[in-house]
Image (cartoon, rainbow, N blue to C red; front, side, top):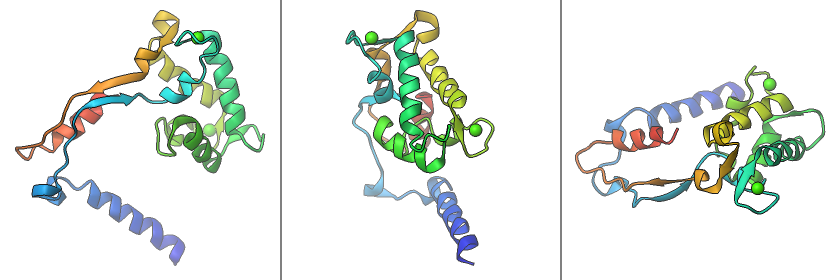
Amino acid sequence: MTRTLLPILAATVVAAACAGPQNRPQGDGRSSFDGGLILNSAALFFAGMDADGDYAIDRSELSEGLTAGFAAADADRSGGITAIEYQAWAQAALGSKDALPGRISLDVNADNTITETEFRTGFTDIADGYGMSTRGEIAFVKLVRYVPPVRPTNGDWNRDVNIERGRR
Ligand SMILES: [Ca+2]
Ligand SMILES: [Ca+2]
């Protein structure tokens, strides 16, 4: 009973949170953001791969970093990263267990295990998005992004969402 009920309750909470503007708090409960620099996905992980200290990640640093990252994440050396292992690794290496990329996006065949191929492919795709495929390196400047201030004043809650989507 408890096993089946909990996911339903969790799903209900998520659905309520996503239900739209009518469920947003009014007045002082509205959020705003003063703007500033944010870290792009996997920024801490990539930055830590800079072995020669030139503030850029080249292809060999990326490859070695991915090898080391997979080895660290696969705590029991089973050859795959389980959900629990990924959560622990993401907390340590990405800065949060909720940081992107999430486990589900890396586990392409959805077998609840992230193989080394899936791990490397997922992070290589992100690295390519930061310029690895075109420039052969990721400069640190690509790992941060400026987000302008957000001041919802006319009930336009979608603006928060659109800015969040603009990061992808
Ligand atoms: Ca470097
Ligand atoms: Ca998999």
